[in-house]
Image 1: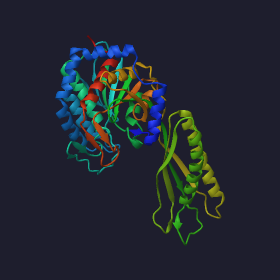
Image 2 (image 1 turned 90 degrees about the vertical axis):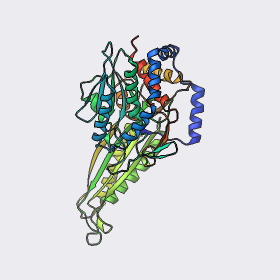
Image 3 (image 1 turned 45 degrees about the vertical axis):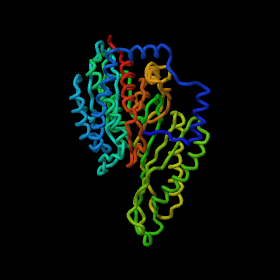
Image 4 (image 1 turned 60 degrees about the vertical axis):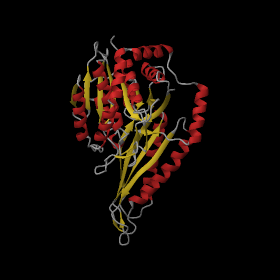
Length: 430
């Protein structure tokens, strides 16, 4: 999960301007629909069950957090989560060939599938200490919020539906995906929509902190690994040989200057970042290889495409200029590998899924807010399938950091909101 970060003054200004333009809020028909669902006796029983389960939900949050799920190594956590879903009952549970865990709960009518999702993976590499430490009412551990708490929201929604014997008209698919973070490149959700036989009609991700926010727009991103290669040699004895580090530095300089100029005038926020650089064997060796990993993002595909073109042109300009200035040395070569792609897009505020999400939040006396982020919902949105991302509740911070923390501050509210949104979208059988 990745967010745009703003300064306090910019955020305050943005909120003020947005509030003057239009306050987000559900249309009356959706407020009426959700209010009627919330008054349903079975739904009230489900809410009571969510409250009753809260100590167990927190205990299992700790258990699941302490099962490492590094990038591309989510299997052990996936098997444990599969067992939890099976024990909840009422669903057909399986793990697909890529490692996603899925549980299908049949509706009374069928024909449509509404999915609710949390992702299994964390950003932390193998060997990271993921033991949970408690200080007062605060739980500290890498991944305890993003996105282990999201997984527990999904599981608790299923348990509450089963306990209260909630029947939906549409089928509901409970999903725990692999590969949401980093170089996982949304591989779990991409597999579901591109290669599986499942046809999903509506998608709800639980992958945001707090409660009350709705992400209905996906930040687009493209990521590359660029490798520059040469013969390598001794810094003194082979002085004059082409140096991949020097060429890479020239490429970065051209890209940084041109990208900054475009970013300043782009129609939506568009960013760029050289996040990793590597290569070389010692201080007195001319490296045979130099590489970097680059991330570019934008709120619209047109700006992202332009930034991508600037990047590729800068690479070629830097390499050509460097090679043209060499003496007798062989030329450097370059390899560009795309390691990530997330399209931008939006589920319109007027769509039933966004409206129901806002109505559910408003039914709790909370003012909803719409925001943009990058996550699993990007993929269905790009395919024209309604998708939103909702919060996992409580209070948390420091996602992707070793000191990530979470507090159960009215944490059940987010579970109830996810439940209410899901049931509204899937339709409740009276």
